[in-house]
Image (tube, rainbow over all chains, first blue to last red; front, top):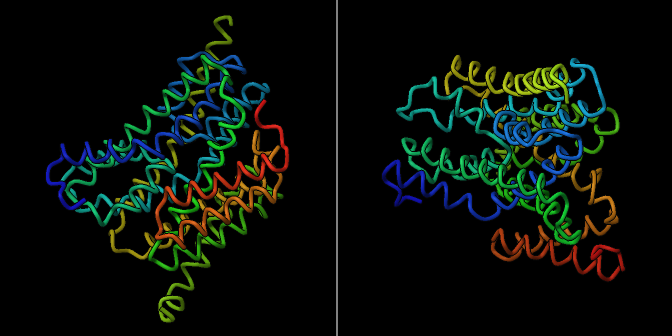
Length: 237
Length: 117
C-alpha cells in the first residue's frame, strides 16, 4: 500500500479493496433488510434512505420491526439507540486514524456517518499501511463503495424478495462471523485480542438478560478488563 | 397509506436516524476535545473490539433467522475450521473462509439438513 501517493490513488485503492468480501457482506446483509422492509410495507425510498442515513443494520431492522408492530415512538427511539450505541466507541476510536490529516476537522462529522463495522474494521487493519494524509481519501473510496453495495442489496431484496436459494443465503449469512472473527482476532496488539475474546464469551451470556444493549454492555465489560490488564499482558510479551 | 400515516412514518424514520447519528455526533465532539495520544482512545478501541467479539459470538450462538436451521455444533465446527485454516495456513483470509464455508456445507449435506429447497 506504500505505493499510494495521491488522494485519487487512495480513493481508487479504497474502492478496489471494498470490492470483494466487504461488498459481498453488505449486499447479502442489506438484501435481508430490503425484503424485511418490503414485507412490512415500507416504501422503497425509505428503505434506501434508511441504509444511507442510519447506516447500521441492527438499528434499521429494529426501526422497521418495531414500527411494523405499531410500537410507540419512544420504543423505536430507545430500541434503535440501543442497538446502534456501538457507533460511539467505534467512532471515537476511529478519529485518531484521521488525526494529522490536513482536512478540516468539521468534516469528521460527515466521516462519522460513513462508519460501519465493515469500514471501521478495514481502517483499523490498514491504518499503518496508508500515509496519514491519504487516509480520508482511502476511507471515502472504501465506504462509498460499501454504501453502494448496501443500496444494491436493498434493491435486490426489495424487488426480488427472497429469491436467493436457501443454501446460498446460509453461506452468505455465515460469512459475517467468519470474516469479522478472522480479521478482528488477527491483531498484533494483545489487549485488543483479549477484549475480543472476552467479548465472545460475554455477548451470548448478556444476550439472555438484555437483547438490545447486550453488545454495548459486553463491549464495555470486556474492553475495560482488557484495558486495565494491558500492562500485565504487555510485560509477558 | 393515507397522508397522516405517511407523515407519522417519516417522523418515526427521522427519529430512528437521529437515534443513530447522535452517537456518531457525540463521539466526534468528544474526540475533538481530547488529544489523540490520550489513553482513552486505547480504552474505547478495546471496547470496540469487545463489541465485535460479542457480535461474532452472538451471530453464532444465539442467531436469528435462517441460521437457526443449522445445528449449533455445525456452526461451531465450521468457525473452528475457519480459524484453524486461517492461522495454520499463513493467515490468508480466503483460506479461512473456504475452510469454514466448506465445513458448513459438508456438515449440512451429511446431516441431511434441508437447505437445497
